[in-house]
Length: 373
Image (tube, rainbow, N blue to C red; front, side):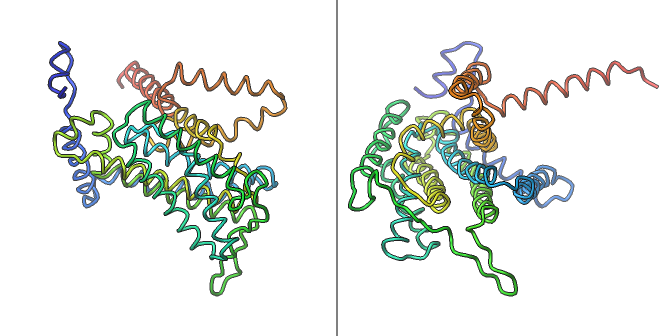
C-alpha cells in the first residue's frame, strides 16, 4: 500500500510521503550548508561545536574528579557502553532495524583483536583495525542473509546469530580457550610523542581518555551521517520501506550499510574491552548483553544519538549506588526501567524536552502577566 493510499483511508489524517522525507532531508542539508557560509545564521553549528567542546572538557576533568580505581574503572565501562549504544541506535533508531545481535559483534571485536595480538604478535592498532573491519564485515554478512526480514523476524534472526557466535566462542576451545578464558591481555602500547613523555595506557586515567576520546569520535562521525542525506534516506526506510523503494531508494544497500557501521562500532568497543579487562571469557558476550544495550537505547531515547549516550551512562552508573541493597537493587533497577518504558517511551530525551517546554511555557506566562511599564 502506498503512502497516498494510507492517508486516504483515514479521513482527516495525512502522512508525508517518503519522497517528502528525502526532499526535506536534502533541503535541511542545503539549509545547513547555507548557514555554514552565512555568518549571521551559525547558531546551530556553534551550538554543536559548544556541545563537543563541553564533552571534551568533561572527559578531561572526570578522571581528575574521580581519582580512585573503582570509579575510574566505571568511567571506562561507561565509555565502552556509550559506543555500544550509539552503534545500535544507528541501526535501530535511524534505519529501523531491530538488531539483537550487538553482543555478537562486541565479542567478535574483542576475540579477533586479542587472538591477533597474542597468537600472531600483530601490533595493537593493526589488530584493532582488523577486528573492527571483521566485525563490520560480519554485520554486512548477517544483513545480506536477513535483508528481507523485518520487525520481530529480523530480531529473531539477529538473536540467533548472537547465540551461534556465543556457542562458537564457548566451544572452539583450541582457538578461544572456551570457558577457560584468555588471560594476560596487554593494554594498548604506550604512545610516544616527540619531546613529550610517553603516555602509558596501563594507567586507568590515560586509558579512559583513549576510550572516551574514541567514543566521542564515533559520536561525531555518526552525527554527521544522520545529519547528511544518508540520515534522511535511513529515516525514510524506517518510516516506510516500500514507499522509499518506490522513489528509487535502494533499501537493501542502505540497510546493509547501517548494519555494517553499527557492527563496526561494536567491534571497536570489544577491542577496548579486551585490552581494558585483560581477560576474555565467552560469558561476557552472552545474549543478555544485547538486551542490556537495547535497554540503554530505549531508556535514553531511540533515534537521537544523545539519548543512548545518556542511557548508557545512567544504566552503567545506576546499579553501583544500589549495590548496598543486595538483591533488592535488582527490583529497584527493573522497576525504574519498567516505569520509563511505560510512562516515558521517548526516554530521557523526551523527558528533557517536556521539561524544557514546560519551563518555556511558564516563562512566557510569567512575562505576559507582568504589567507593561
